[in-house]
Image 1: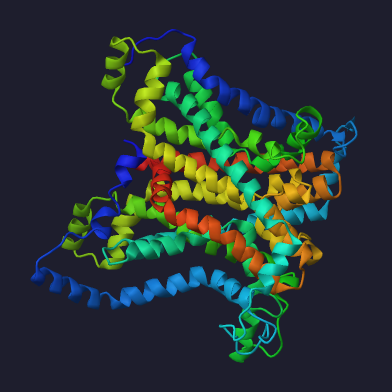
Image 2: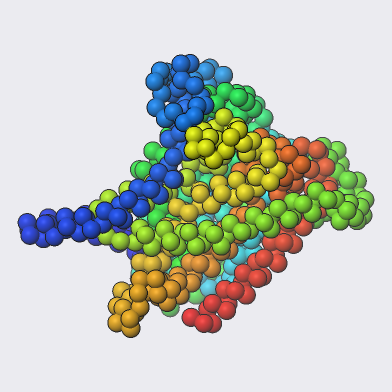
Length: 302
Length: 292
């Protein structure tokens, strides 16, 4: 069964309560009352997870009249200003970082899903010599830490592909992910064989079956995998930090790390920089939230 | 039943993935094995030195320290599993607005390690929030230099990893919980189980595949930890190498000090540890399947 069909049901009964008669509604309100304790727990955990971001944001707004450090801590700025944002935007080309991150993440996620879905189709639905050998070889690459390959990959980038200090250096090595191949193979296996056989009887070739039957059916899985790849790529740091040298060519995480060196003790500016970079990915997350659940839940159906 | 197809088609579909894997995974692994037997600074051609790098490795206290730190870091795995299951049980109930809370808990997982690392650096700064609170409560008299304290760097980084991971892994456990049939809980109730026993005897066994999965991915992630250390220690690895993990040491030797040959030997150690780990994990997995 695919990840999608298993998990789409998770939120529906909760998030869309059907209109109910008055008596039932009253009962529900009473239940909420008895749930007060649980809400307290949920809010406490939420404070714990969100607080470091909130503190960053509040720090970024604090003006010269607000002490950065005080006992007890001062939460709200009394003298709010956007000066820190101005300083950061003047010192570092954050719009360029943003554009670079978008280019890398969009290209990587689209092409990666394309490559993975092509590879996943025969692994899910065809019989051929070497299928299990290829499958286990893919499995083996999963456990190899990527950092292991960075030294040769660096040499390749400089000497062979000549893409050191370009965005291509980030995109090309990220075009294939064995993990994504597995997830999509799992999704393809859920497509009924009768459907494929019917298409074959009608004379469709394998590429047509892949493009016009398989891909549309597993679209929710494709979206989940693409979105996960997007976020992973967006937040990737170590390899991009090795490859990107010119300031204008950096992605957001690499530029953000440069910010730390640039404004070493100016925490208002660092906080402003962090806020600027976190907001876009949070908006993206809010928009695509359901796919995260789907993708993560699907990962375990091995 | 699938039809028999022309022989070439599956390979055509697989070709892009296999070519990319060959270039960006298989070749580099073979190459790094080769580099580990050379004196190499990434720029000039490598010079063979036999086993010299490995001999150096055995006598390098920082290397052993980094391995020790990486093993200590693995402690995040059981903690993450316990806390994430707990959180999954808490959010696995029909309450108004529960999906908003679930989303909030996931925020650290999407924000990126550099951003959250900087946020934590500020929390634990000498002038940061933690010291402000502890001072105002009278728990400390003078500000603590958290990140400049060799015994604190690793625990703070681990705390950061746990904090960022709970929401992420609890989504996996939540999906698992929702696949456990309600009848099992009913049966447990009839048998006289209290809430705690219900989770002990129904939830935990029912989550076995998820537990295995999270154990594998979170321990592999712990062995590879880098970003948190990099940001929290301001790319130094901490005073007296107190935060240096195996990947951090690999990075430092290869890309800061230019000892790529030596770093390749460190990479081999990382590979060996990962392989041993994966074998243990597979054993564990197979045992789980046999019991299920």
